[in-house]
Length: 635
Image (cartoon, rainbow, N blue to C red):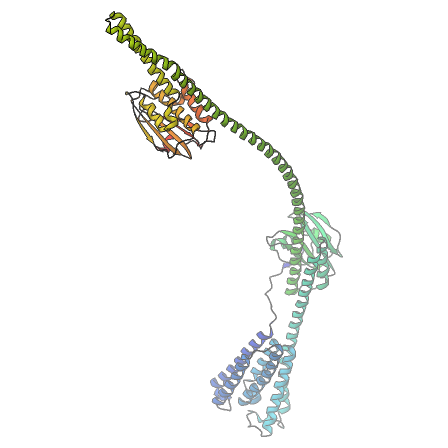
């Protein structure tokens, strides 16, 4: 059975700077002065001088400590001030011990505390020097009392030089100071060695990280980790195991057996435990049953440390396995921490290298896709260019066709109107004139017959002939007006429509609202009139209406005409289907659309029909989008 343990997380240790050490020494001095003053005040029997003298000396000492702390100096100046203060510390403590009984003073322990504090906060060398200084001051105090240079304060005069107890007590006092200094210095030196060792390990870690980051080959990173870890931590054997899925591969080895196997959750409990806890696991020896993979990797391994190589999310990358050998299983905390740091940095660099490789692969794929996309874009641009050229050609053909259509519409309108004008003129100059002349002759004949008292039947027949001829003349004149109203050319659209409305007869009342700001062009005016004429013909023939309203207005840059009647109405859904007697509706829409406009028919809610049509300012120009009549209102 393997014996292993998880190493707890170490507490962080930090090497103090000179400024911090000086601050702590200042606190130590304040504590020494306070302790001496309190002891003298609370135990009056120990002092040989007045409390005021001790208070004055302590206040002077504390003032010098405070003033020294106010001075800001560099490292060299700080060391000089600190050395001077150490000498002052010795003088103050020697005087305090002299004033409270000499070698038997209870305050002599403050000297021990001072030596320990200086040794730990400065260095072991400084501690030995301070102990020597305190020893010298003790001897000087004793000899000064013996020579009557200062008053005798010793509780035991036999410890004065020349006394029976002087050699032993003086030697013990000095030896005690030196022993405290030496023991404390030894401990401080050991601590400094550890700190220097940690510093060296950190430097090795930094160098290893730099070497790994400079290494482009992913396979070299585990090798660099193992080599550096074995050298720094004095491990004779070791290995770096990487995991990919369920495959375990040996990425780097030193003195171990080759290995390549599959891993399951039941295999190698040490490995699973290290990954689960994400902490280093120590093992005195390996159990072949519970850890077969590691036992095969490091045969007869002793004192192993298994360090997981994971990422922040717990992703497994591998393991660092080191064998320290020997019989001792104990390992210092900071060593385990440094090994974990080595493994962590290596895992990060390895993962970054893998990511960089993946990114490079993705970049290559992106470049390939970019090349394909570029080629596809070129092909697409070529196709778009070809389609654009074809569309441009088609648009040009449409433009030409539209222009031809407009010309054709204009020709048709002009031809129709010219034919109407010719027929009207021919009718006016021919049949109308002849019929008028015949009517005049018949009237002359009728008057003569009436004067001659001719046969009444003959006279009646003659009257009928005169009436028939006059009716034919009126019909011919109405036909001439419908063929080509003269007012359309001279007075405009509104005047021509008003004249036509008046000609519809007294049975239909009308209202014409002229809101045109300008007169439409000739061809547009003719088309507007013909469509309106056809709509009014339908009102007269089919609507049985009694009133009609006509609106002329400008809208959307073109010309709008709306004709509302109060007739019977009809089914507008079949308005433009060819029906007997209603072919005019389809011709009206065709005429409007050929001119580039639109025409709409709507059954009014209050009864009757509303016909609305719009034409652009130029024949053949595209119409604006059609909007429902109810949404537009009365313009």
